[in-house]
Length: 96
Image (cartoon, rainbow, N blue to C red; front, side, top):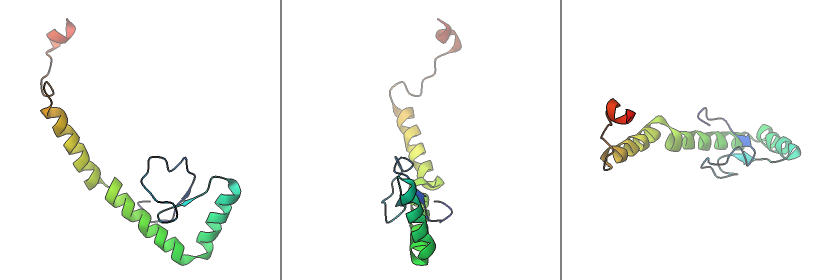
């Protein structure tokens, strides 16, 4: 997706990825359906370009370093601010 290429994938492969089938990716769950979807991409340059642009946009907006980094930073801040979150047990206390 980050390369801006059109994607044909199975429903299982797309689980947990925030995409809209038909707009961002093409879905094919059977061999013949896969061949059909790839054929559509071969025949339609406009579809290839649109799906590629949409895939790239999603990769950057939802899965890019800037987005994921800020989410990770927020997670670390929540953990550090939790009661007892910033305390460390000493080695001797942990051995007890």
